[in-house]
Image (tube, rainbow, N blue to C red; front, side, top):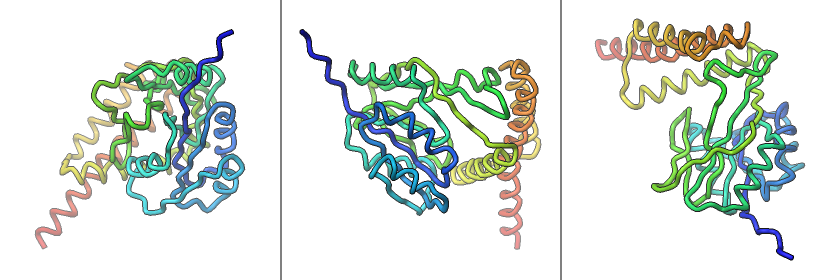
Length: 265
């Protein structure tokens, strides 16, 4: 009788802050298959730590926030398993995705990382168009074969040369926003970080460019990516995304005006 194949070990890694509402469901979806769970907190003031410690002893803190990319790099430094699987506190691994992860860990294919498909629940429904689905992101890779970029926001996994990405089967459910206020607060934060990043890289813009980017965003989401098939939520998302796009470019433009004024004084 053949013995079952030995699979590679994996750590589920999260960076968190004030995630008491979502964290338990997320961690519940990891318990059956993750060998370790590592959380790096950036200064929670709610029950995040209390909930996390019910699932793992690997809870760490880094309050010196330097951006999402640097925070993920710091979290990866605590990982000593073969693979890392990245997940956010507002995401849940479905049984189908769990089975696909375990198959990949058992196969241990050389020079291979894996992407997952996120399916987002927004304002009362799953979004299946609007450029939001399919939404493939690289989340599973060997610890010695990849890591995150140091971007302030919209950080990406950077894999070593020769490592390819294969898709995993099954969706990861993403509970993106609690309500409209949550969306506005979160998008404002991301818009600021995006402007910070562009400014740091010496990028410039104009108000006309901000308008064009916002208009293009709406057209792409609602028409090209068929957001109209997502009903009223699809229309709302297209409008809100266009607004967020305008804000991040307008923020950069305002900073340019301030710099010009200061240089004249």
